[in-house]
Length: 240
Image (cartoon, rainbow, N blue to C red; front, side, top):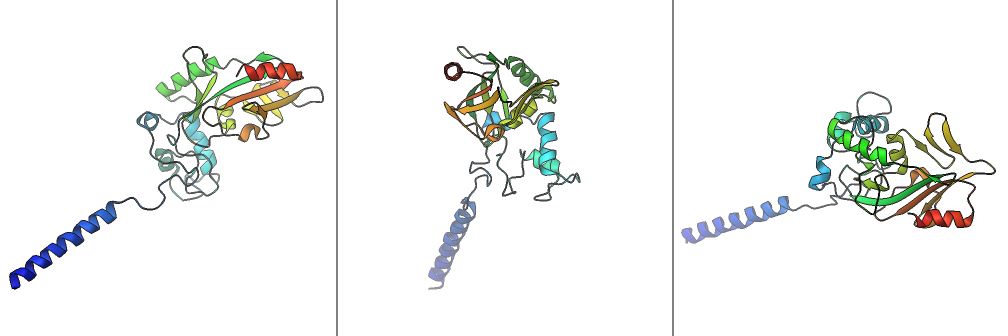
């Protein structure tokens, strides 16, 4: 009888132990990024992408507005937030930008000023340099690459995080884009006027988000400034 009781007790301990192991090993709750709804785990390629100097400076600007070296939302050291791939604190309920590596999407885009297409190919070269020496130019979160035919370098936006707005891309290459103005470089800006306006299209339709629009996979984006006719705009849209 004592032997049977001992065996029964031992079997019970084994079953309880196994149950506890399964319980604590099972990922319960929502493991996605709270700001974006996307998982925090990056692909091997994305997780190896470094923050550029621009990304680090922008992360500090977005997360540490009082300049004390700590995240305003969670109190973590900014360097630790960056080490966790945060551009915005993912513990801030107002955050919209996911962790670096939380997405990998591509969107075609074209920018026209007074009928002439802006060439972004040099920023594809700068991005390759940034990946080597982590220079201040370009961002790992949203950038342009060299491309294979039929596309040309600088014609496709690459997003390596979810929810990254267009203003991050333009700021990373020294430009500014808003609903009112497109600033190419110092002294060269194109702002809304009675005879010329700035227009923004996503997938063939006008969109009012402008700089705050976060491109999605397979989007076709057009930014156009000038006094174009409907036929000219159609031609520009067809080029995307």
